Image 1: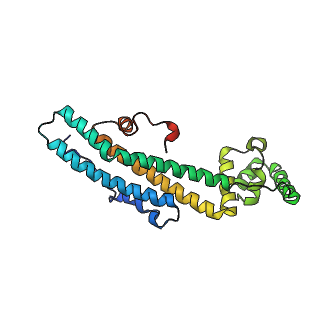
Image 2: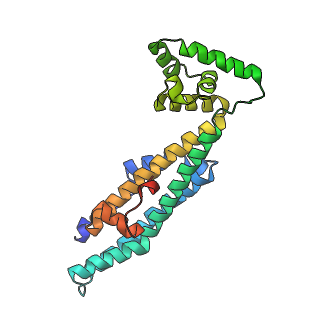
Image 3: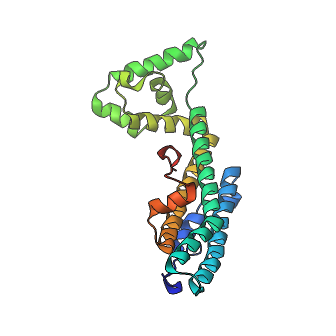
Length: 232
C-alpha cells in the first residue's frame, strides 16, 4: 500500500458528520452520551496520529515490506486500538443503561390494590374475547398503557402474545407512565446506533490501511475474537 492508497476516517464527511451531530451529544443530560461523543472525537484524533506514523513507516527505506506491515500494526495498536476498546466499553454501558431503563419502565402492579387488579382482569377478559384482527389492531394501532399493564402481567404465551407484541406494549406503557425514561431510551438508542456505525466505518478503514480483513483487525484490537456477548 502506498501513501496515496491510504484511507481515512474523516468525521467531517457528510455520512460520518450526520451520525456524529444528529443527536446533539454535547447538549445531552446523559453523561454516557457526552462521554461517547468525546470518545468519537478522540477516535478521529487518534486516526490523525496513526496517519503521521503510517506515512513515516511507508517512507522508511530501511524497512522491508514485512517490516512495514508489522510497524503499521504496532502504530495501530499504539494509537487507534485503545480508543476502539474504550468505545466498545462505552457502547456496552449504553446498552446496559437502555436495558435497565426498560426494566424500570415496566408495569409494577400494586398487589394490595384490588380495584386496579379487577380493572386489569376486565381488560384481559375483553381482549381475550376479541377476534384475531381486533387483537392485532388493539396492540399495533392503539397500544394504551392500561392495555399494556393488563396484558404484561401474564406470561405472553398464555394470552397469545408474540415477542413483538410484548415489545410494542412495553414501549407504549413506558412512554405513557415513564416519559422521562422513554426519552432517555430513545436518545441512548440513537446514540448507540451512531457509535456502532462509526466504529464499523473506522474498522473498515483500518482493515484497508493494514491490509487485513475486519476479523483480523478485531484480533489486533482485542487480542482475539470479540465474544458475541460483547458485540454492540
